[in-house]
Image (cartoon, rainbow, N blue to C red; front, side):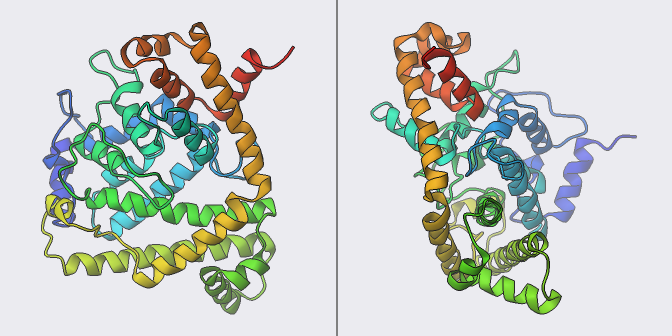
Length: 384
């Protein structure tokens, strides 16, 4: 006999921590549906995210380097998959709900526009006075409104807990969060959502180092001189394994960095939770500060690494200038579509009647992949 949802929910109650969010305790969906037979509610959410168009488009959206720059460089999709993997590991160690954590991680960048954070900043500027643009809020709009897959409701009709995780997802790289479809009367999100936040940071610290080395824009020698986290990991790898070939050495140093980050988060969070008196998922939401945290020492080391990446990678002319050139295409298309609304898709025209043209066009552009923006610019604006 197939395992039933009730059996899966009972298993969660037996194995998860008191502060974990249980599937059976979900606040439910905005539009009521019959529960799944052989999946929990969060497993259904995960599947809906993976099968969405917005998720598939992440394959052709920039992470740091413009999409198509190199076969081994991350895209927004590979970044998302790495976040989900690390988030599950941390969640499992803390005895949290892995399915909810993974779902939030998989969905956290669905609203990211083309051309990475430069594209986000450009859309935010274009929408000044019109509500702005912020990719975490846009991720929530994608799952609540923009995906059109079901005859009964707009969006994906995800559970309250998944939507809460998207609403309250933020890292040091992000703009301040905006309001959305989930009430904001609780200071924090679930432990699972907090895990997804930290997994996002751990992932881009590590893969941006990897991509920077792969591209030749970062050097091991300079990293070892200027970044304590790298120096400690490199010394540990050298002491244990001697001299390794370049690719293997980079990979293993970064693997050690990830492992040390995860261990720090698990240890620090366990200590926080033990002294907090938190006994339920809502207790965690009511806490004034996040329970899922780095240790104080690790936070300082991560800030040092972040500053180094900004100075040596994100604003390196070989990364910054191509991204800024690509962002000009977004600005050009935004102005063109405002003047020529017949050039946008039918769905965008319908949304414009409800939301106005600036927001409808912003949604249209945010959903595009890097290569589609380039193709549209070539189609409408490039000289013959």
